[in-house]
Image (tube, helix red, strand yellow):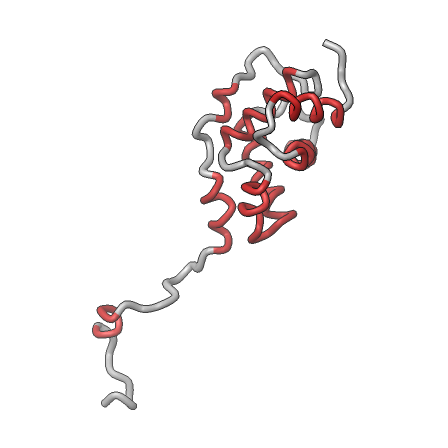
Length: 147
């Protein structure tokens, strides 16, 4: 299959299937570039093909880097609500010739690998309880002002 310009690929996909915003595909391309760079720097060599789980982890890392606490909201606004959605987009891009595929690649590589909501919100959740329960306050020793 002949390589197609990325923007043309996105246009073709969106005419067939409008589930994902065009910006979602641009983000995915940038997330793939980010993932490849990270894997290359970790391995100190030219990297092999990126697996589905590697891309998913790289995508969440890139989303957090680019959008911080708004990452989940941004991705959801583009129609991306799960790792399965990212896999679906990857295989749409493969189908039109914008991405390559190894013989071992499968949409199942993206199934139930990550909990996208958890991955994108966990870094911003409080590490300690924000409000102490009444029970935990009762178990603490009295302070001088309470005595």
